[in-house]
Image (cartoon, rainbow, N blue to C red):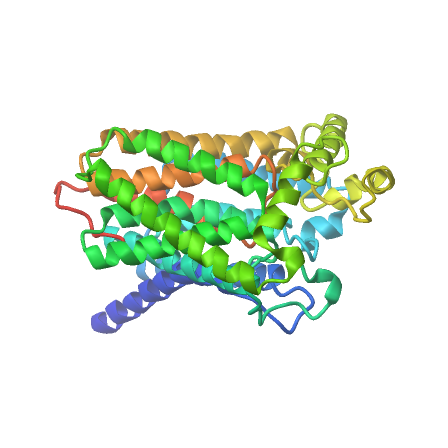
Length: 456
């Protein structure tokens, strides 16, 4: 009977480990080509199902095996609970209860999704069993990120098996499995610094070259999204990465860095040249880039800069009307309905406004200043903890890993100024916050200073 119990407990642990792997590495790849929306709802429902399965396993362990519930450090648990509570209260007072409860079909940011985000941070911070598992999860995410970026490049070149069958939803730019070029750019901003860290940590020359190719594909895909917000965010992430890395002795000469930089530039140039030659004329890289740059300086009627400034001003007025708990999760389209006519008339763009294209403003609209404060509290706790980990750890490979995570979060938060939360990208962000906590937990709980596994 004891043997059976141990075996059953091992099965539960394996199920939890598989669910964590799917949540961080498989979820970004999920699409459903047979549906009208095959990017957002499949990912949202898969996330719900996996989290319910994890919760069931935890409860069975508690009831059958008397295992204590996974604990979380108070400095993270409190802001997570505040954020979840603000989402629940905002739903109660929502101006569009159906949207807040069930979600907008093109956004899927209902109260269930917001609660799932907090659950992701909780499970990745408390249920990862070992340092090896944490590193393996990061490694799996890098594989996924490479596949997502590679598919984006192939889309630009004309290979697009998941192109939507409804013509109006066939975007001009690549979207990979993210549903939109902006979301693809945001995902790459979040994962590119981790790929750079993996390349620096790796000791095998052959694997370093493989990581360099992967980084080149990431950069090419990011450029091909033509999302200026993600370009700015990526530049900020790389700047922060270099700033933090200056204090780390990585044993690499300047000449080597220059050679690798030139090689990486050649990879990106070759990829862009090959793909641009096969793309239609109106989607050629440099002609599209020229149009994007020109539109960036038109703050009155330009698509991107002008439209965002218009919506931001209107959003601030909305927040002032319901400052505490907002209008309810995913109720933006109802709250912003009054601005549609003016927007269409001014920018000659017949769309329904459903987001402020600024995640901080969007959070305040949905959950009020209380929800925004809780969200910023979570971000501050995670960034301060990572910065302390970079400062305190004595292991070079772990320090580089922390720098990658910190820079990824930094770039992501810059991107949040110009884009909103979406279920194709946000689960990865919340899961990584929890995973960063797990890595730090294993380090502070270990007495050995043996080198950590690489992310190769």
